[in-house]
Image (cartoon, rainbow, N blue to C red; front, side, top):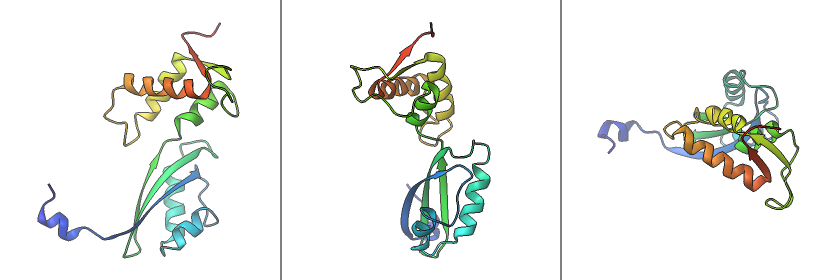
Length: 155
């Protein structure tokens, strides 16, 4: 339950904006510029802060960012690690998944790949309290829907 002080100091939210931006590649051009500009947010402040937070990732890595815009033209944002599908495609070395998952196998990955992806995803705000085993099972399910076979070791 929120205290009275928290309720009184809470700022009114104008919008919640969700974007996918390349790591270290936020510029005031589309798609970032129009999305933030319509709420009169400081584009350069967002770009500098986002690029500083994502500099540890390789350039062109698609990062999911959720921006909370407040009515006083300020903002907060959280950056999530790339999607599981992006990691699986990189690990398998493919451009896209199978057109017929379950029938046609696009590629194979090992359990070690799955474990490494799970360790990275565990740092996400939504997964930080999930056990590693549950994250691995979720990733294996995602791999199955993409037509990627999970094996113990590569032959």
